Image 1: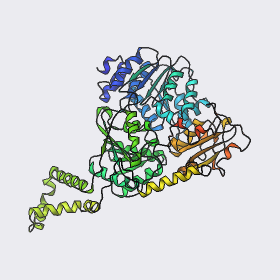
Image 2: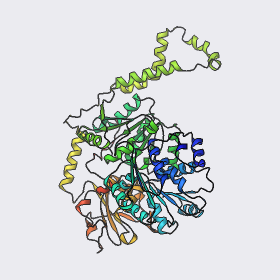
Image 3: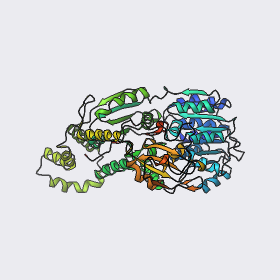
Image 4: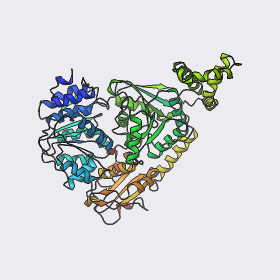
Length: 595
């Protein structure tokens, strides 16, 4: 089947021809005819990289009346990177349609500029939830005539704490709209949105629900915590043509790993929320152009990253949630190509591989971290092969060859080869000359000294939860329920501006005029710096470390409320709001050190 057989208008077909697109992907082939047929709701389940943007974007552009100058369709995405990417794609698809206006709304940019973009007559708005809520409250955008709402990466939005924001946005649109929900996985929360806001939706599944792309080879490597960085270097050294992503848990670890790689001569750069938008754009530009070989990133920064030809995804640590692995691994094997996704685990984490296998419905291969000897052999023969393939530019070096030959006149062929190889390879040989086997066996019950010390620390914390509940720092915030704050908003604000996963956030206590929340001590200073002064509902947030961890329940006489019906501080939220994606058991907290 070709796109011309799907019933799309000529202007859209011309844009697809300009892009070189001829045949739709499976999700596009199934979704587009269904969405063009009538006014209906749809749930589309497919992995990242399968063409979901065109699957909803092309029928959306087909249905919008671009002669009218008001908002008719809204696309909601979890991050500004994905928001910008979707907007860019829709503008490309609609470039031959007269009068088409696509507005892009996201935090970190001028809200006045974005408001003017809407007022100029935008028919389609692509937005992140937080900024969109802000503009709705300021009446800078109106949804009275919206016919279509698209929720892209719905599972990611819920994992980032956007549930209440999505509810609010959907409630602000007409009841007779069509809702198109696209997601890589189908957790209970996504199913609940489908039940509450959709009328007998069509469900399209490419592959199995929550499954992984069949073109991805899944691997895991077992080692002690202190050997992670050494293992990473060996993996990079043995995959000489790698074009890959390395996922780390925190901004600090991301920067540390990237700094170490750059110092050791690897073509790598970091991507995390601590970087300015300009820096992030520059890094992504380098990565897309392939002038950058390895991108070291946090989950938050890499969400919505749309880059083809990535060969490897390396999970430096286990992801905070099993479902995050699906999104991470989906960055490779895009558009029918093959890729590799690998995880570094310690012996005590091996059992979690089974949990991921069950979730993605795929098996992992247990692989061995290559030895120093194996790395040297592969690199040596790769170098020799490159020399053999090198094009000799006789016209440029010919005049120098007689003098060079004279220098080697007393050397045999074997001696010249050995000298050239040594000149290029001595550094690698020296580095790996004393390297050890760093593999650990999955059934190894022994623990290295670092792991045993970490276990003792966890035990000490459990004995005295009043002092340090799983290593959390208590924060006071100067806004509460009266300012429109809710638990989802707290999670979103902290995660977005401090660039940390939701699992780092613990108990949240909401009062009328102020709030308290817990964050891991490792990220406390980042939160204090990055969340301070953030704009929220026409006010400025003030956060400070609370002297008393349990002070949230007794201070100020405020009345604690919670939309879920439970009291703030309920044990359901004691170590983290599970609904926001934080499972304390998922192997986090371990930090990288140089090998």
